[in-house]
Length: 79
Image (cartoon, rainbow, N blue to C red; front, side, top):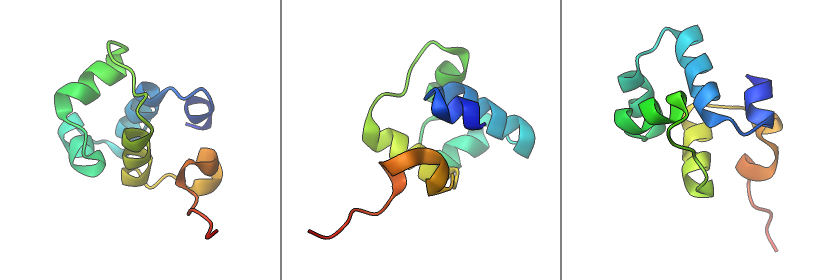
């Protein structure tokens, strides 16, 4: 999973999480707020996830620790 995160391969990440958690794409859709058809295309490589807001929602929904995501999920520091 760390390799998928490092490579920003969110389709592979979703597939690995699903397989290890014995989840269906419908379950992943509920966790990540992404549609099941989009997840299917993401896992198959037909679509890519490039929108940072959607990436953050995905990673947050999967409860990926911030130390594995880099600065994407770290709270914004007060100015």
